[in-house]
Length: 152
Image 1 (cartoon, rainbow, N blue to C red):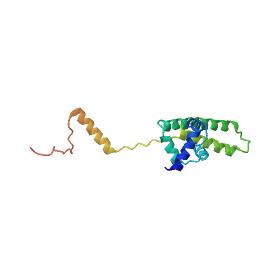
Image 2: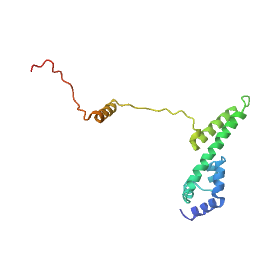
Image 3: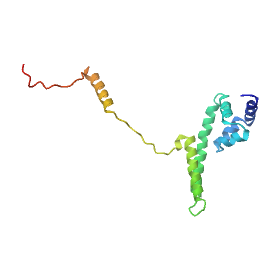
Image 4: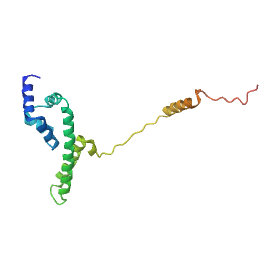
């Protein structure tokens, strides 16, 4: 980065890490904060990495902001009544806040996840053969041949 980037980062440092992270934790979006100080995501990433532990403090602020969005979703849902003309916008706000909370903190992710299990008969056969080897020694692979009609 050149001198322009360094000047912009100096402006970020004037605002201060605590101020940034407190505002993020209380629901201000990163996009809005970056617009205020006039930097982009690339400079933001550089600023985060310029101090030990800063990226983790940023992650903590994001996690805390999930509580803000979850709380606002509940408040919007409770305070909006069916007779209001704003019911559809309130539903959208609740869904958006739930999504934001889930993205910022996994404890708010309520989506149902399906678990896919693939079973291969070949794999089961190999596992069974390995278990038999452990219990009884080597397992000999082969086919049985009927010898009852053979004369001695």
